[in-house]
Length: 187
Image (cartoon, rainbow, N blue to C red; front, top):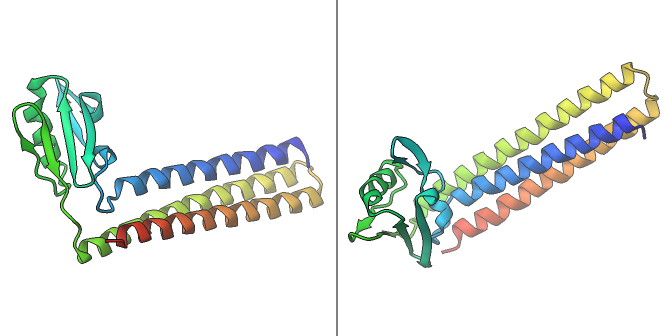
């Protein structure tokens, strides 16, 4: 295989791997009943005029499976943190004791679990679309290489390799989704 073909294949694989990593990060945001600090990852707080991630202004940890504790580095940040968590509409009601925020993570209802599975399914479909877009771009690159004079048998091999790579990553997404679905539906 020519260097251009190998580069095309490596680029496609790197893009697909990035799509898989992104999907995994999105899945971590979908809570499965256990409290994790990552549940607050998308929440931004007004820190002296700048919207800042919670973990940049406070320690976020989970002392047990049903509770998140947010310990701000400055006491003045307690109220803005509390407001930011409420505004994020995560279904949490933080308890302010003057030094820390305690967030009780309620157990999931059956209906909420099904909604979370639907959301996970949507995320996995988005991941598959991303993989297919990378495949399409790689196939277009192979057609360009063909026009530039790369031998047809090498192009054929490249396209087969791209398809195998696509199938592998689609399968990985399906396995990730199955694991997340099982995690969500386990009471």
